[in-house]
Image (cartoon, rainbow, N blue to C red):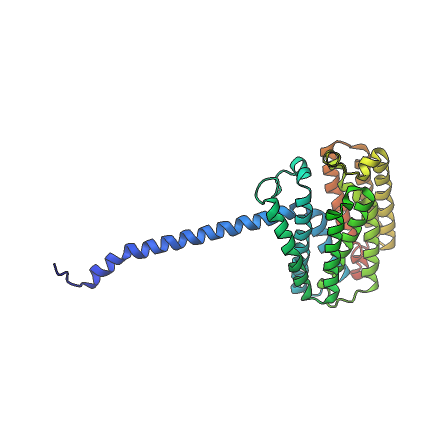
Length: 315
């Protein structure tokens, strides 16, 4: 039977189709956002434990040593640090699956968020990504990126992390290449002045003599993996050495950067407190808290050259 056309009836009959289209579009958009958020969360989990140990100290160091030239430069440097931190973390974590099952089961690989093969593919993809990001800032930064990648290979693939001497050298190389690249990106020019180079030299010495602070709380996992860290090699002496290193570097850095009396005393007290904790409080959970406080001290140590830049620690 012939059905007459009526605009109002035609509009009403099309509404369910439009509504279903909107619902489908909303469902697709929600699913896409959820998946993106899940992947971002996974990447953050890869880097989570090193925000306090690398990301924040290196960012602060670069802002002071460069010094920071502009907000865009600072954001570029932060991106450079995070992408390279992700590269190092993925490389380290796909090789330390057994250790993470004991010490950090929430990480992406032991928790099952990412498979070992997927982590390997991500690691391989991150090398050219890091070099590409670095290429926007000149060959100096590309060389820093390549140096960090080589350090990563020595640490993970050639297993220099298995002995405390090799591990310390790799940590020094890693921190230096992080600091070098981040500082060159952060500043007005890639040419660094005397203050920046001296700050990096001090940083290398401090890291080499105190980085065992990160190993005290992981002794159980390292023993099961057959590693020989400094706390395993010399359980008592490593704690005594850490105590004296923290006191010595607090005094040396405070005097060299000509801090004001109150700032100097405060910095030395903090370093002494960290060393005292490592020597006297030896339970695993106590070592974890000591390491957190150590990173606060390290953050301040990286900030000390600011006094030469802006004379802000004269109190």
